[in-house]
Image 1 (cartoon, helix red, strand yellow):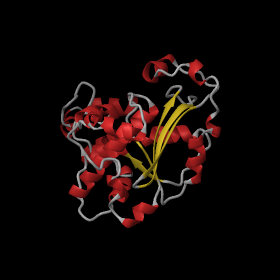
Image 2 (cartoon, helix red, strand yellow; image 1 turned 45 degrees about the vertical axis):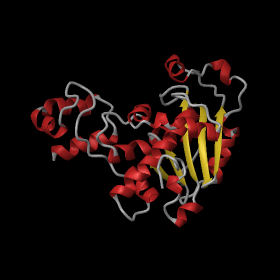
Image 3 (cartoon, one colour; image 1 turned 90 degrees about the vertical axis):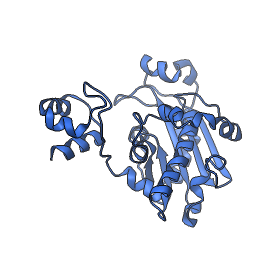
Image 4 (tube, helix red, strand yellow; image 1 turned 120 degrees about the vertical axis):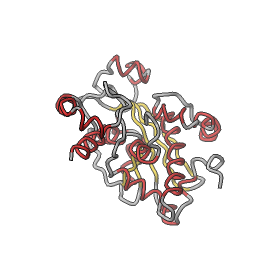
Length: 264
């Protein structure tokens, strides 16, 4: 099977039990990234079967003002959401609750952020989770960045996204919820291919769920004064800087895991 020609359906053709599962790929745009911020747009694709993909692209209103910084990223202004329904009345919200069970998969790029946003709206998760960001770190570790838009170009997904978008009736724009979901869908198919190449005979979706729960042992710094330097080397050579990082920087779980690993 050609991964390019079957993109978007490839991850459904692995084992029989996966044909029974629902796969909800989603992304949110928000008023900002602080504790008080809320969702103003949801994009989602619900994969019901090989030939049935439900596309959801919805705006919603909120009483929380949209920050200028957020507007500069997603271009959603207050007038755009003024007459939109609240999040609780969205079709996405109803579908999310309807399929909320462990045999179904909830998938996002940096899922901790999007999951936190929907949990602010009262959602309690029972899905099996897949984070394409963490899985990409595990399976495509040679990349200097694993941001979705970076991978879009580095993996040349942009060359095939047009045909997929046309088929699904989706307009692709960076930092637009449904556009990001379509790119993530293409990335997911490539991650499944990597799983099948690296872990022969395993259920790829279950393996991706396992990798989602497994911290990544990073090799090099992606930021700071030691950018592109070997982390293990710096942990031993500059313990003062490492201590400063852990106390003063908002490090993600993978970086904390890596620093603790090499420190031991």
